[in-house]
Image (cartoon, rainbow, N blue to C red; front, top):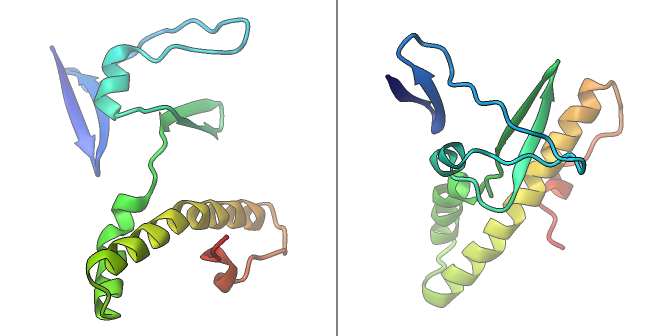
Length: 130
């Protein structure tokens, strides 16, 4: 028997013995793999995947836009600034589009710091609008 176990929105398919489900996939000559349909669907993949190298392991997971995680905070801030109606929607969309590049800059900064690079991105540049 197989069951799905989740933690903070992450889904792991496990057998009743507690071991993660395992599936071997082929790698094409172009280094491409096919994600099994049940994993693709269960994890909510779309048209992008994030690959993370962890020691000798490769983690492949769906790319999240990050907008949903910040939506409540963005809306709360904009409402506090007295935005409403169409202006609220336009500002929300503007701020939402800025989340992903800002998160990417934060991750890049963390990587540089972990490697000992002293070049830091000032906080005001993180949410800089293009």
